[in-house]
Length: 396
Image (cartoon, rainbow, N blue to C red):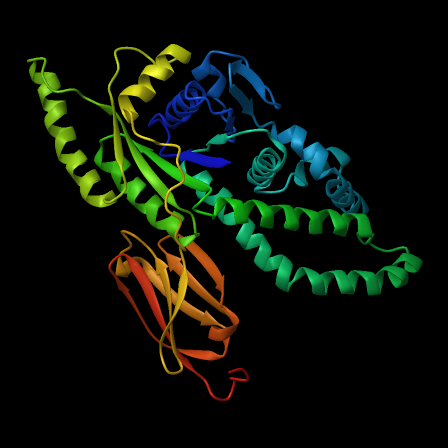
């Protein structure tokens, strides 16, 4: 299976690009599901067919789905929410207010990931196209599995042991209810499922992201930052789609002004994202709504290119041995600026911050027994040099 995620600044046409790509795939014989994780769903409007929380056939080989976060919440998180409501009830909170308070922050993003996982694991698809939310929400969604994994690996086991030890004592005292094992098991299950989906989404031989933009300076600036942030979190971008490009010619001054302005931005797009392929979709006379218009959109944007083959896979983070007792961790960060970068070693973790985005990297065992010797940002990659610490080294 191939998985393609589409994102971009709000209003650039990412839903259209995702739906058009899925339409093209189905026309080329791939059994395709296009799935929207954006809470402000517009996928059904784009394909011109009502869509629901389960895959709906749009055309031969083409299916669509809009994730229903509330429905998935009921299926996945109800047991945990019931415990939290009981906890608030003990504190005297009104039951209706307690219900509202226990809608966890980030729940929609988590549930969207779980639906993506379900379709990857159980769906009969050759291609899964995911119409993601605008970039800020997408970055939160894609950062969640690793962030929750860090908590689950380090903090949750301790909390679970404490809960089990205290439950008999506090139960006899009739105090605050402690979570049952079924609640803790639900959290553990969630962690395992998110770990699975991250493993698939960060495999560049299976999954890649396509950035959609329009030829405007502000949109380009956000797309550049998004590329850096996606690389920070370990995700692979395989292409950029420049949408609503004014065609040359026509003779009137208004269009000529737009063509000239876009020409300068498109030159920056080419320079910023090389060597990624950049596909251009012309400004259309009408909205690309319905399968025939979406097919035309894809044909003009992609031409005859093979846009569904898996890109040549590469590790987005690597560790190299550079000499006797010396190692280097290399993390690609295309377009990152030194002034936006911060690096901190905390025990067995390396905390990398780029602008407003932070990733906690669990160091491989060989690097945990080393000290950081230096770091540099060069050729679009962060390189951190490590030196063996004889006091900690116990292996060969």
